[in-house]
Image (cartoon, rainbow, N blue to C red; front, side, top):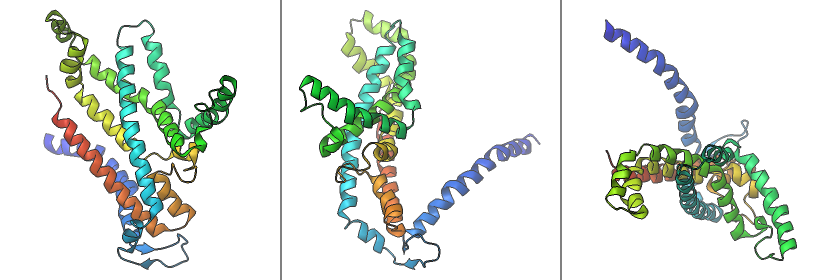
Length: 291
């Protein structure tokens, strides 16, 4: 009797979620796979022509798509390192017993509450007008100029904005990990004569591996999928130098009306993100230490 009752509760809570997941995620994803095998301009009145794997062959000949892939890899590597180093340093800072630690946590986390589009427009003003003003007043015009007009610096600008947005979020996860480390373990290490570097590398970092797993996953997937900051800050410019994966797919579908080719790119994009993130999680999970 109790077993039937448990099954009823289980179905009551899981079926709505399963229905939503199926209708919102699974079915559109399967339809998207189907679109990747047709040639279609997105107009319902026009026919969809089955082309087999032609879209998948075509996308690997698309130099702009391959360039966007390279831009995304560069951006992701830089963002992955800078976001996590910044988040970890901020977490160590605010857990060091400062009087203003609570206020500092709030200030560092605030940028994450602002949407990527708004952040992009805010930083667009900073990189164009504020940087130009500082350069003219200080004479450091080789540093303070409009970064968004330079292909290399425009990519760095995107990394800065992404770091500004994500560092506070990763900081919260690292704080939770640091606070989960028993104080007596650190005190015992101090009594044994371990210096700060030894305590960090031998105790803190190994016990923080679950936090590293989560933060690296969030940063890796978020950097690969970045679109809002890309759209509001650079729009892929200058001269497509900062066009990322997601923006290239968006332009292919909605700007050039190549629905089939755009869907094929989206499927490849999904496979790349899935393989990389699952590999990262598998590697870092193996290094996690259980107390």
